[in-house]
Amino acid sequence: MITTRQTEQARAALDAFTIELPSWGFANTGTRFGKFIQASAATTTAEKIADAGEVHRVTGCCPSIAVHVLWDFPHGAGDVPAVMKAATEHGVRIGAINPNVFQDQCYKNGSLGNPDAEVRKRALSHILDSVEIQRSTGSRDLSLWFADGISYPGTGSIRARRNWFIEGLKTVHAALSGNQRMLVEYKPFEPAFYATDIADWGMSYIYCQHAGPHAKVLVDTGHHYQTQNIEQIVAWLLSEDMLGGFHFNDRRYADDDLTLGCMDPYQVFRIFHEICSFAWETGKTPDIAYMVDQSHNLKNKIEETIQTANNAQELFAKASLVDHEKLARWQTKGELIGAEETLREAFFADVRPLMREWRKSKGLPEDPLAAFRESGYLQRAEKERAERNQNSVSSYA
Ligand code: RM4
Ligand code: MN
Ligand code: MN
Image: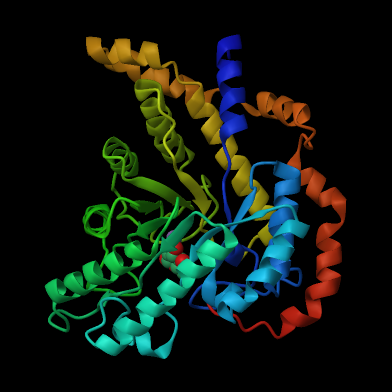
């Protein structure tokens, strides 16, 4: 049974919770093996923004869209006015700016960690251009992911590469101003298969410390080894004021980029619980950028994104139900079952009626997916974009 107090807590949690969508989630992307083309997929940045706007229209919780500089700003800063215009038109904000220093041929041996000083310079200059785009779009976060690393033992100096990274990231940090932040994402393997230059949260944390106070760690839930305890990493980063944001997705084996919560909703709940518990204990709302980073190769992209937003809201609402006083009492007493059951009670509570009510109170459709299906948006998109998608050659992600 959900008490009145819990209902209020959940409503407040839903009021505060937003999640950013990735522009690349709307285009025809796939796996390294192949792509299954969707006739309705976005073919231009404006269409990606339109799709994100549609998801926001039916969910009310996705007010911003993350963009990839290489894919969404092919002419660099020159594309800013058109992108901003599309965002205004479709009722969303431009969110995190993602530089791309992994696709050009020169990046075969890395970007900021490349042994060739010329390539390092080129990567740095692209990232600094991205900071300019970040400034002119009014985006707070620069989201950095590097494919850097080495794939065979002995083929690079791990320490030299680390030093080049520190140097590069310091320069990026020095270019930030106002409330701008840089988020440093880690990934244990892929595309590098021996030693990734930012392999885990510890390395990311140390790079951030070297870079400066506006550098924070970005946790992509798919970027961990199978048994790693992600919520523990989250709790530690929160305590250190180093958690900048998330890239949410779910997986079964590696970096599968599946729908958030489709495999292990309890894990997402436990991550949210650590955040809610931190907020309860400290009285501070941590400043975290919740973002989605998924690649929709099989399900319809817009529908899967609506599902993702819905899952995120549902699991966040569940985490907000946890009775922290009770949990703390059980924990202090060493009452294991009492403590564990307090957590499980919240996880298993059915928050769906409450979510429907919340949506109604906000003038949103009670069932976002059904509302989208009834809108005819997909059919229109299919008609308009089918031909262009036939020649779709965009690469992975
Ligand atoms: C990585 C990582 C990054 C994304 C690239 C394309 O696995 O998740 O965030 O930008 O893929
Ligand atoms: Mn990511
Ligand atoms: Mn990834």
